[in-house]
Length: 166
Image (tube, rainbow, N blue to C red; front, side):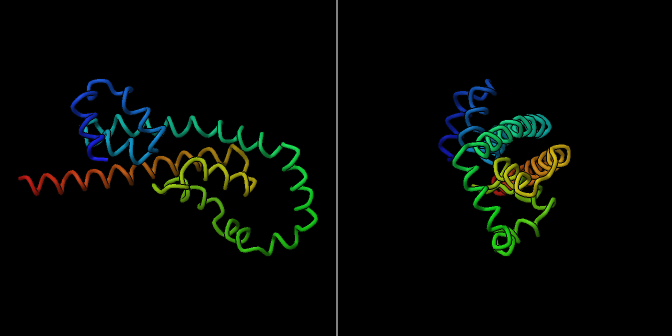
């Protein structure tokens, strides 16, 4: 990872989109934010760009989930699930999703872990059957808080490196 960041710093640091957008797509929010921060880009520039990129994913994931849920195979599974609704409501996964509720959408969206982020946040809001007017602000809030968390960790790393060198 550090080799990639050094390569980018030496060769592509003047052209933001050449490295930042592919890093965001391939590595996600943490990789893009930390590499941009380590290359010297300002936090006030990185934060809106990443939140905007996260926000652009929301309608795509809603469309993807709606398309998948409207397929014939999933409709058959859904019909079968309706018959077993009482059993499903007692399952641990369903109870866990209900316990998380709307704060869970923010929590899952802000976590800088694989399997978390916008994809999982949209899925959870679909499972909770939240209206889009409620889930969009929750997802954007989770993205914003996640970016701040990652940028704070990056700033702590940079301060640590400065104290070691200084």
